[in-house]
Image 1 (cartoon, rainbow, N blue to C red):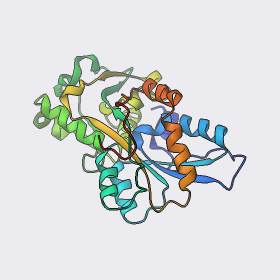
Image 2: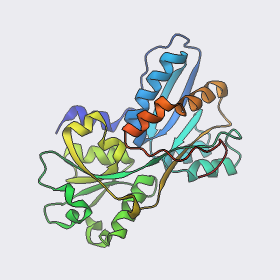
Image 3: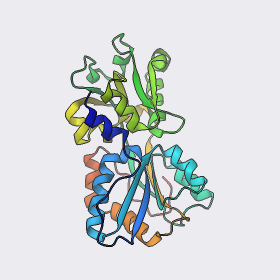
Length: 264
């Protein structure tokens, strides 16, 4: 087990950014776990450019959705499922006109390089006796978990492998199960499989997007935010071409440009 990778993927709930020039300006971002690696880079660039401190909390979109409904102290919510921000908007909990579909996620079959599992064969390899445990994110809370189940059902494999499934609280924990040896293979976010840490240690197969519903991801600024101006700056920053290119490098597809406040 590579302990360093495991610790990275367990993930701190807070991202310890360096002290910015203007420590009085700060935003707290609730971000889906598939954004873990790319958003650390995004936040660092934003802090350098603006002097605004960014505190990142990573987790499952469903859990953040529940927290926000109960007054969770976040300024912006970057969800891996556009439906959660849409529901918050319908409930009057978001700043009007800020709903923004920022990316479309993809899933991949991932195993460590030393594994005998030939992920290049696709999902069919999961029925082999050598594959005893398969990690996915909990489909009750995580859109990537629902996508994994949908892909397995699409290939008529779900009933054959359901007893092998190990559920992570979010997609990062599902990936960590593979890295730590708790699972032989995992269905994870492509953005995690492409991260420098995991890419060097593993091998992956991109699961065809036709086998699961689109993972449209959306962000909103919350009504409860006390730092709406800074939050708007961050949301605008994410729209810049430089950040769009960074997102693509982590395997995200970028949907056609939509005005803020529109739905996917």
